[in-house]
Image 1: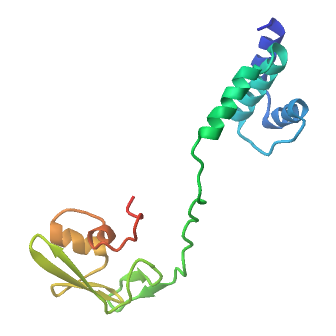
Image 2 (image 1 turned 30 degrees about the vertical axis):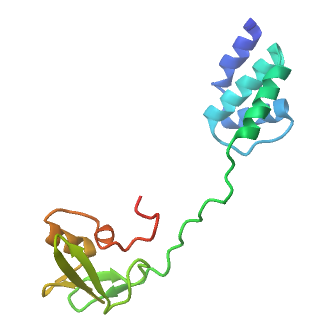
Image 3 (image 1 turned 90 degrees about the vertical axis):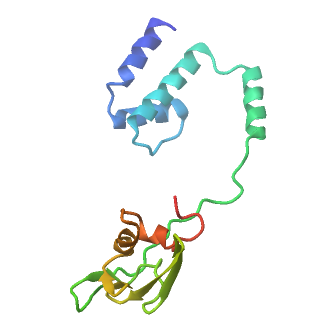
Length: 167
């Protein structure tokens, strides 16, 4: 690598993002929308070195094309994030605030049944909480903690998450 190229590469780190974008447009012949300074510096450094010392050999290009053809391609698009529904909160008579829009919960009045350590647990969903053994809890996690004695996610404990959502 010549001294001139080394000097140019060292100067890249001191440039602003706007100056890096201009240099990118000059070297690549097209503008970039990125504002990632590290990426711009690395990409410009690669381009400057490729122009000064030569690009990839034809053999390397063929090998890269072979590897790209063998790569597994994603056949389905990624899942879109779930959009939250209305986040209107409901104030209960006991002063608890619950979100009426949690899509993971069945409607009030539903009884959740779950076997646990040889017992069958039953929890009724109320508009203002969750009833279990005569007590009203404000969350499923509180019910699960009362049952197990340790904190755990109530939706996971009562298996209310859909397939693939437990991660």
